[in-house]
Length: 267
Image 1 (tube, rainbow, N blue to C red):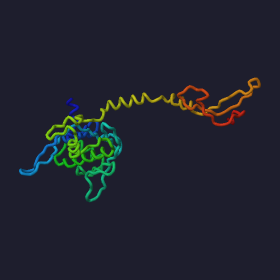
Image 2 (image 1 turned 180 degrees about the horizontal axis):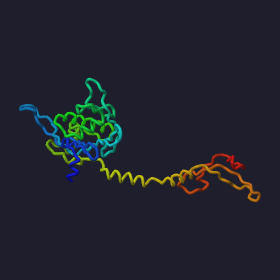
Image 3 (image 1 turned 90 degrees about the vertical axis):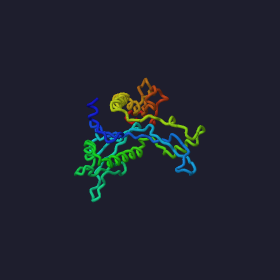
Image 4 (image 1 turned 180 degrees about the vertical axis):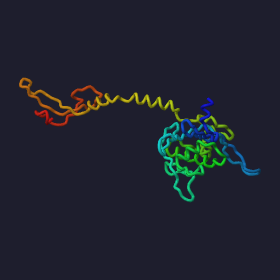
């Protein structure tokens, strides 16, 4: 266990970097409206509905930097998406960290010549500094937006929207705690070993190359023969194929290409 912890670099309580897996892990908690109360902002003012909120459940987002080149994998419990990590354009006011479409742009965040994916990897592997908090905050925001745009996270309602929905419930009462309405689970991507097992099982379930070739051959055209004068040895020929390779071969399961020929080569 200590060895495992040695591989983890904490940036915040909800953001860590796994050295062994070269993967950034961000835990996003969901903020929900759990109670609506009547309150006034100051004495003498009319009371009005106000939302009380709490963090309940959420999702884990992983940014896997192991793919080669400038590629990375964005991963959640709902799937994964390949993205790019590129160097920002070198200019007087160079972007330190930004987003363009499905690309994370990284400038000289280490105050040296490194940029792009290599700069991000080096940054994550370095001991966190207090001055790095702004970069960490931007990185968190960009990864979250990319995951949302890739539909790797469920849609989140705002606290205001949830307050209105609570007020429309038949059992609504001011001051009542509705925490139990929300899913408390923090959904994380499958562990690597589990993904490996699933990939192996999927491969095992695929038909073998020989079986695939046999199935393909069953649906290919072939020449069918029909004797018109068995005594004289006269035959006619026609190109046919099976309509459904999974059904037994019989006349009703055959597709005919056209006319019958006495010459087999013409058929």
